[in-house]
Image 1: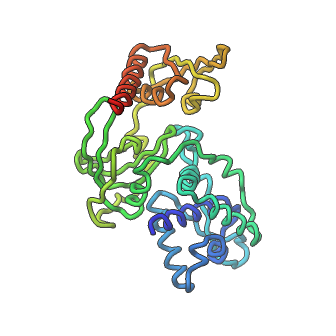
Image 2: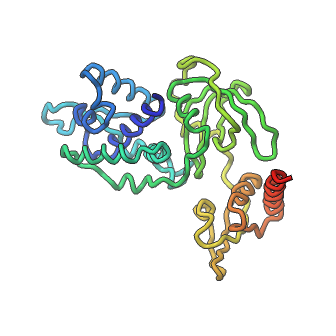
Image 3: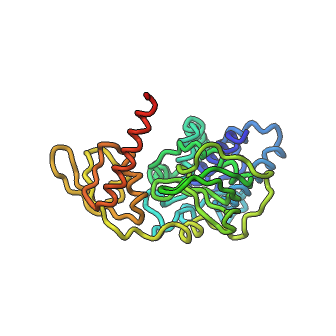
Amino acid sequence: MAERKTERLMNLIFALLVSKQYLTKDQIREAIADYRDSTTDQAFDRMFERDKEELRELGINVEMGQNDKYFSDEPGYRIRRDEAELPDLALTREEAAVIGLATQVWEHAGLANDSTTALVKLKAIGVDVDTSVLRMAEPKLSTDEPSFDAMWEAVTRRIPVSFVYRRPGAEAMQRHIQPWGIISWHDRWYVGGFDLDRDEPRIFRLSRVIGAVDNAGAPGSYEIPEGTDMKDVARDLFPPPPSEAAVLHIREGRGQALRRLAERVTPLGDGVDEVEVRYSSHWELASEVASYGPDVVVVSPDNVRAAVVKRLEAAVSGSLAGFA
């Protein structure tokens, strides 16, 4: 049931953002499978109103208006691209629009077929769509973190959760939060909310969640502060801009996430590029570099190189221990 609702919300975002005009309720109902399957007009209206409210709670504003202000045509709905975009000041170009979140979740949930059908139906009923939005929002990261679905449901239903969380170089700890929203930043997924252990808002990277995410309360048992915007929360809580520089040797065609952060790329020949990137945490960078194995080598600085070596040695030791 939760997966079906997530699919419906993603397809609603998809339809309202790609359309170049306001979509009437009839057009929206025709385009999205769950709405078409509603047994009565009243059932559709209730479902649609609930979905609009959930999108607003997630910070996605559904605008109501008319396509021709001089005639009394039926009111319609859309998501304005200029309002959906995230500010360049705080986020990378790859994350410049809320539709990026929608399409990445859409890809993760295996919803391509239904969403493509929605686009075809919009075209079939004469709606002019802007497919450049999809090119702008080409997915850049995987949403295969095991905790993603549970966190998404917790956010949309306002369910307090608990989970084990481990930061680089620190012990794993049990955390308890009231989730406010999910956001992507620098090719990573984060959940933000009120940390009950710290008694303050915090941001948690989903790839650092260990094991299951457990419900710690009933749906709707807390309120998200009025006016909360995850973009503002992220700007306040994310680490400061990178200040240190590292030099890496990366094989051609590898390390794409690192290449997108590069300030300089110099081909060295033999299928290797020298890439300079800036970073704020040497542990963060070491974790990223180590994930590429032999395809990325740290030239400098020494502390990043040592941290990568330590991670790789630990991974090898763990693998060998399984054969002992």
